[in-house]
Length: 141
Image 1 (cartoon, rainbow, N blue to C red):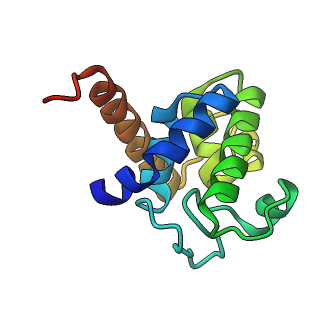
Image 2 (cartoon, one colour; image 1 turned 45 degrees about the vertical axis):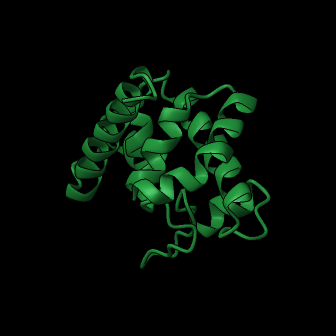
């Protein structure tokens, strides 16, 4: 996964800077969603680096969900939307990214009790903290 992460570091960094989101958060979601595989396709139809569902891809104007640039921009926009509706609560935004915002609302603005979603939130947060820590270390290490 590290090799794939390196391949997309520049486009993730540029997208993050242009859109005002932490690159570490984008890295975390991509690592948790697809392991940096732009050709990833889930059993439910989610595609690309950030595993966009067809409806979400269409909502953000994505014509090719396997195109890393399109997928990344749409995924970032959707993640930022979720952070906005959940008052920047990262856990809830991640849960909504995985299970949908309606699932979070249906469970009283809490992480839904779905094992997959709970594991996803833990995994994405672990990747996020890992990327935050590595961004603080000197590059020569």
